[in-house]
Amino acid sequence: MSDPSLARFRTVLATAYAELERRRQEVNDLNVFPVADGDTGDNMAMTIRAVLDELDSLEGEIDEIGRDELVQAVARAALLGARGNSGVILSQIVRGAAEELASRRGELIDPVLVSAAFARAVDAAYASVREPAEGTMLSALRAMAHRLAQDLAHMEVQRLGPDADPAQQDALLADVLERAVAAGQEAVRRGPEQLAALREADVVDAGAYGLVVIVAGVVAALRGHAAPELEHQPPPRAFAQGPGHESATYRYCTNFAVTGEGLSGPAFVPALEGLGDSVLVVGDAATLRVHVHTDEPERAAALFAQAGEVSRFEATDMRAQEADRVRRLAPATELARCAVVAVASGGGVVRLYEELGAHVVDGGPTLNPSTRDLLETIATAPGTEVLLLANSANVILAAERAAEIAEKPVSLVPTDAPQAGLAALVAFAPDRSAADNATAVNEAVAALRSGGVAEAARDDPAGRFRVGDAVAYAGDELLAWGDPHAALAAVISDITRGRELLTCLEGLGAPLDRASVEAAVPDGVELDYHSGGQPAWWWLLCAE
Image 1 (spheres, rainbow, N blue to C red):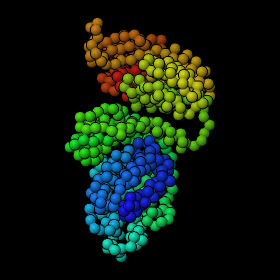
Image 2 (cartoon, rainbow, N blue to C red):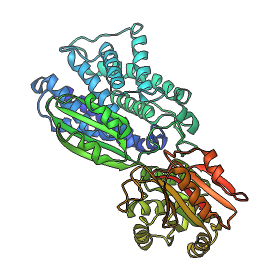
Image 3 (cartoon, rainbow, N blue to C red):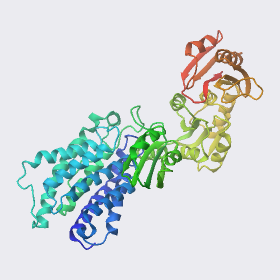
Image 4 (tube, rainbow, N blue to C red):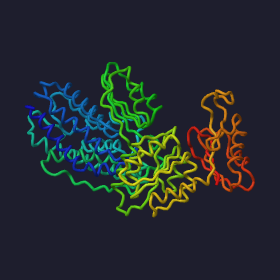
């Protein structure tokens, strides 16, 4: 790059990138919103790195390259390099600022132009998010822009002529941006007052702090010495996501680019929101960057198959990211001898397992996780050994394989129903070996009688039931079918014979209320009733 001003711009950006790199892990550790996957610093750094790489590829002076072409190249590089919410929003901040700076032909960058660039960046950033959340990097950016606009009228030097000395320009811009850093820090501190997720975790927003770090890095480059001192931000005191967080039910942070002609980002948003949340689709008619949290990354990408070419596809497992982060940030404690890993599905069922100390692998609608899913949870479970509950016949083969190749000793209990696993966990003791626990839990399972009622997914070839009818099972035996009342009563009557306690997990779409279940329970049998939220099964039942 032979043009001095382009070289200066590259140097300033490189220093900002270096400052973010220095604090990258600190920014990652703050990340709790919209999902606590601990990668905000990574995502913002990747966006800036992509712009630096693009600048390295350019040859010639700015006017030779063309201001519009330079802006387009920088904006496209930021867009394609972006990942995650923070990276995509930062790419739009870069685009908005670059468009404003390049629009003033013949003007040196001065306080007036910097203020205008921040204002345009605010517009671009807010426009990229369908439901902007205050307390985040959006608020920090707006606070910076507001401070610059407010202070501009009181600045002795607002404009620079074409003959201004580069040193004078650097000093003036550093003074202006130092004001922005101060305003950004104030906004960062206010974040927990504005956003419940931050307040619950007692932490500031990672994206907001990361943005302040970047601007502080620009000040350092302009002044030629260390960045303005920033208050260290400690990691959250609570790692678990609260109910107000987005994406608590979705697993993959999915990112990809789409190139083509006549692309319209908003047209794809409804379909993406049908697959997940935290949807961002930004770009122009030729290039889009797509971000969504979903359980079906391939289906999200397939939505664009006819519109253009999909590239740079990434689907990052947010649960694995969060588990790694929790393990790294959690206070050092001695591991229990044995931990429990259980396969489950449904918010209520998962909560019940977690209340018993189990670490849950989400089996999805069909209770069918992969061996990799099992291994990841086994690896992060806080025990030197692991007791693994399959909880479905579909899982047993994958669970056997995971137990064979895991790095820590694993004993498998081949439970074929999640309600049986819950009831049998009363026999578990964390200070025993996994093998001893497996023996005790297997004995507890053998004393149980399980059943369930589901909605028939297809017609019975023998003509006994049709799609939508109730089908009731006691163990593996098809016991009753047809009307939900009759089917439920039949299975409860069968499995509670000679038993004292019936556990019932109500699933999604159950056609009868709790009172109907209670009415079917025989005298002398206690009912332990929970909203399980499991798919496929209206009721899961276990008698002991």
